Length: 314
Image 1 (spheres, rainbow, N blue to C red):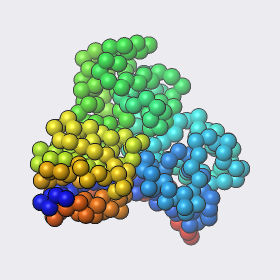
Image 2: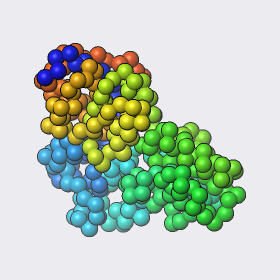
Image 3: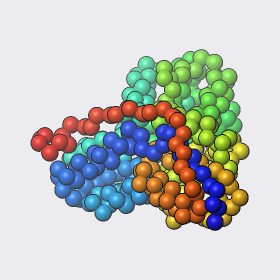
Image 4: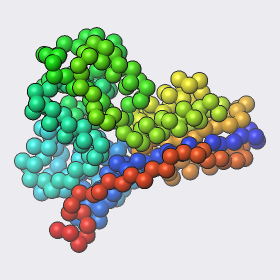
């Protein structure tokens, strides 16, 4: 046991406004309409959250064929393609859209610029549901790049009207590097008025940049499917810290702390505070004697819920 270990707790960490809103949409739908409530894809990428909602009566599906007629359906925080929206609407489900408003903003911008004749370059991870949802807003004319090497392979149909969009949960630094490569190759590319990477992703990465040089080890609480959690662990490693990502306190291993003086603890935007507290208790059981909170940005963003979810609202 390490009896001199200090925990440095990142600020901000954990749930963002979009995740809070998405979970509340499912819980309110369950309270108002009763179980089961169907959710397309994991509402947010966190095992604990998904399992908790399953117990309460949420059923997570990928294929709309698995949703019975007349059911209540919720789209996940990552957003869905236009084809999924149209099919769900045609099937007559009662639909609530839990897409993060910051993702919706990207969808709206893509649709608007497409009407003006733009093609798009999207920076993101292939196969991620947010990327599929954004690219699925259009029937074509949107090209995905995952790294700088992909930029050299781009063959857009035209270069006069090109616009750049990004997945909202990327590494801020990696996205900036790829965007610079796009700009170098296509100088006239239209960049977003405000960067697409969300405020919570930015804030949590900024906290890691401050934390990493001060600690011997960084623990990130987050599920393997969570893009923004993975980026936090990657960033800590890039900054020279040993870093592990854990889905639960049970994954913590005693040998990680041998010879360490200070451990940094943070959580991705889809990881609840209860998991952070459990991890903290586990580290204390392994010998941590103190916890110190970092100073950091206080997040006050709150997004409104869709209509029709209050118990007295039809």
